[in-house]
Length: 597
Image 1 (cartoon, rainbow, N blue to C red):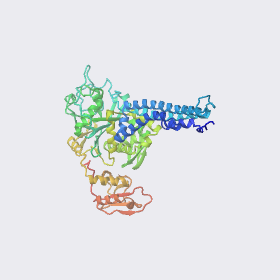
Image 2: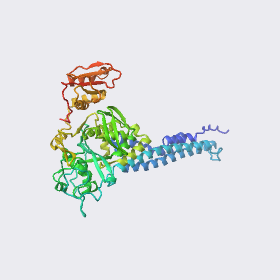
Image 3: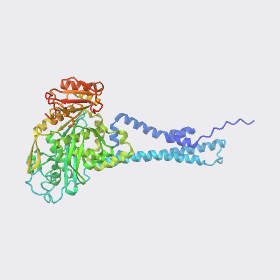
Image 4: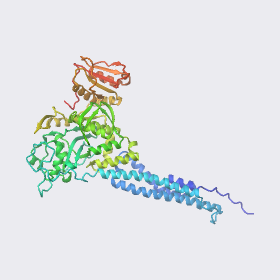
């Protein structure tokens, strides 16, 4: 008798094996019953995945900063190619193993000729698996190359020297009192760079981080490079609090740091602060830093003014700012005061600009106009608007939007051409961790306006603002003296987000604007629309809640009653766009935010 033969196994699907190895190398081999081969293919990616998960659990958000290091991005790119090849080999090998085992079973343990040829559908399925797998790796490579392009473009501040003045600039050393924007003098032939200033210790992630934010107006055809926006952002890592210090572009009389420039120009910089950058580029023998002398001069001078060690700078030019905003899909800004400018400089002559109060969604060009317009208001109002736009962009940054390929590509192209910084790439993990802990609702904004922070005047018919250095330093020194209870209260009110209008019954729109600034500091979304005027003069403050706002915003009601010492009254008006209206009367206290003592 012949022993009964064991029943043959049902033929496995080669395509299924390849697909399973696409999901994870070795799964297809396990499906085929080739266990040793399955373990061999699965072990390397499994160990690598365990290592990556352990690293991610240890570093959490900081891991993003680690990944953004150029050597790491290059390693990721190479590793991605290796992983693609490895997965392709695993999928194809699983496919072939199943074909081999099917032939073995069909031949009762003997490898005779195959009973079937390769099925076209199976081969097509294998190619499809490989293509799908390649597409996923191509997406990883795309984002990796975009990140590498962005990092190399932004963290490379010495890449151009477009701020250098033309050789024909004035060479008069005694023109220091003039407030014009052209350089006072250029370096004499054969001059060498000034001795380097004492290097500040790098930020350690624990002390105050002070960064100079520069908005530059580059006009290469005119030989101009004016730094019209100068904001120092000071961040306290221990509390997540932020202070923003804005110095108007027309400010003069700022002390210069010790060195050759101080000996040449005198103890103070007596021209407009927006011209210092270009002068430092023109006289590297007076200002340290070589090609970076303009940035170093601004950091040294503003750091001395505020009593801060400004470690780094971030610069953006105005056309680049417009492109960045457009790449993000625009920005939504709460306009507190209307912007009216009949002389805004456009590409084809002067334009008339009107931006009403209230919440406005702006394109890049509209945001740039809002941030730069000054003929209908002042440099001080403009500085406040610039801070508001920056904070709005930070609040509205959405990872899901940023990760879209079209948005990411446009943002990278806009950012790498418009943004530059000397912040070390190696410290990105600490910076990202700090950004995660920053409390955007806890930002103090300082705009150093006259008459308290300076004296307005004219030199040779040109407007200047003589800085009150002592008062500016006092404000900077006390920037983080917060009352925690008040801060929590401000945060609660900001989260409710009620819209508050302030109108004056006394015909004093500036007084209403000042009160709106105070309420904004207290967390209210407050504005002072000029066209809203009561019919009669009120003796006391009147606070009205419209259309059920008294029930919707209880914390806002409580704080308004506390501030003004009155009871909020309810009213119904379907046409009213504000939740609360504060009518300023003759007896209303003159409240001001602490930044304007």
